[in-house]
Length: 215
Image (cartoon, rainbow, N blue to C red; front, side):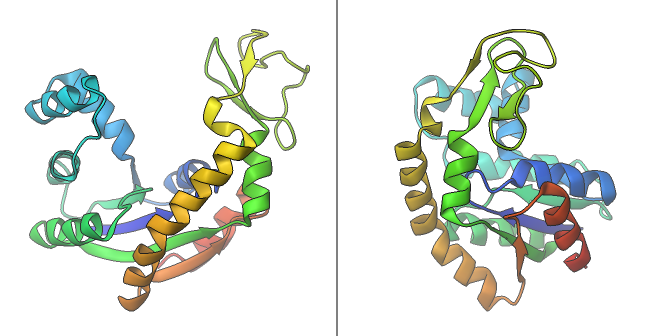
């Protein structure tokens, strides 16, 4: 079992890059958010545990998230390859993930850090707009709708900015990310698996950079 990790600040383009890598390689995209929602919808025992925390407005604890991940990986084949998007977020999660993969006969092969200057991220996120009708995502600077204020996909005219995409909130999110992730980057650097990717340009260039470094 092979596994890689994508690390990057909010707005670094993890989801977009993960999708490009998924279509170009055998790696399966593992998103903890998607798995949580699927487990809750399927009403699995672990999903019901997670639902209880979510309904109370509490963070889902590491133990439950790791159980959902392990169930997902254990259901696959030994030769499968997985790409973790934005997880782990802490040293404790990283060590628990290492132990889980070891039990399943796998290991983290590479950890890709998406490098993007903070001013670029602020520009990306503060320009993000979402269609309230169909959920399509735009960026006023990079990927604007063809007709200003009108969704290309459903024709709706209610494109809104998320509260956490304002400039002040984005700067705070970046500060939290940097404080939280610094130790994690050091952890993987010491293991010799850290790889840096220039994600400051275009999604195509970032994907090309990562794919050229993927072993």
